[in-house]
Length: 119
Image (cartoon, rainbow, N blue to C red; front, side, top):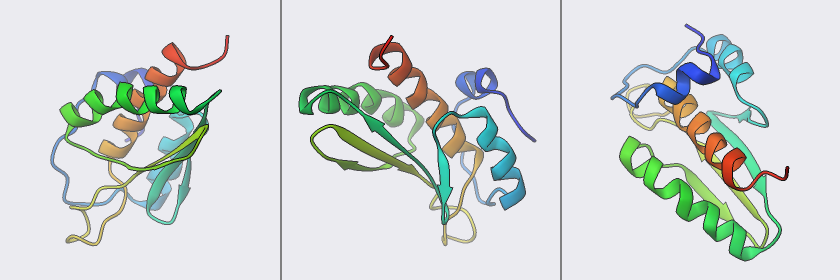
C-alpha cells in the first residue's frame, strides 16, 4: 500500500517483521522529496549554511526519532547531514525497508522544510 506524504505524517511507527517489497518501496519513494534508496537504506543528504545549523537540525529531529523509536544512521559534516533509515528487525534480523522508514523520513522532511529550508 502506498501512502501520501500527509498519510505518513500522521502515522506512527509500529514493530515490523517483514520487509517492504522493492517495488512497493520504489512506489512509496514518490511521497518523499530528495530521498533515494541505496541498498536496503532510505537516504537523504540535507545541506545547511554552517555547522551550527547542521547541529540544530540534528537536535530538532532527535525528539521525533526518539518518540518513534526508529533511529537513523547520521553522518554529520560541517554543512551536511546524511540521514539513512532502515528497519533492522525485518527479514529475520537481516534488515530492509518498512513503512517505518518512510514515516520517519516524512517527519524529518517536515522539520527541515519548516525550520531549515530556504524560502
